[in-house]
Image 1 (cartoon, rainbow, N blue to C red):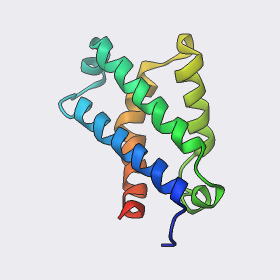
Image 2: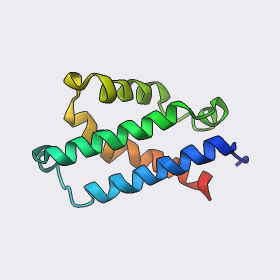
Image 3: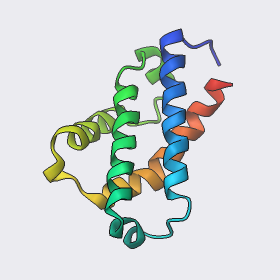
Image 4: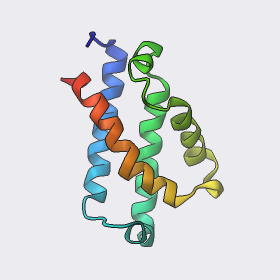
Length: 114
């Protein structure tokens, strides 16, 4: 793996920190129903995902190419919804993103931070 740019490294560090926070929020959540019943958890999760995706928008094209298995366009689109179009927010998608997509992102970026 190549050496990453300083700006990318800083963004990846922030992304990892937000992922750690997400993991601490959802470690005991066993289902969508449990998640959806807790509005504070829903909104905190959405905000952390928004922050992660905001940081990912500004990663270099080189790094995004290296992590081509991630759908950068979908991340940017979801960030817009989370940040600006709350009325279109689908809590099931927020939950699925947290349970499925964020762990995939974590797995891919973790080795780059070593």
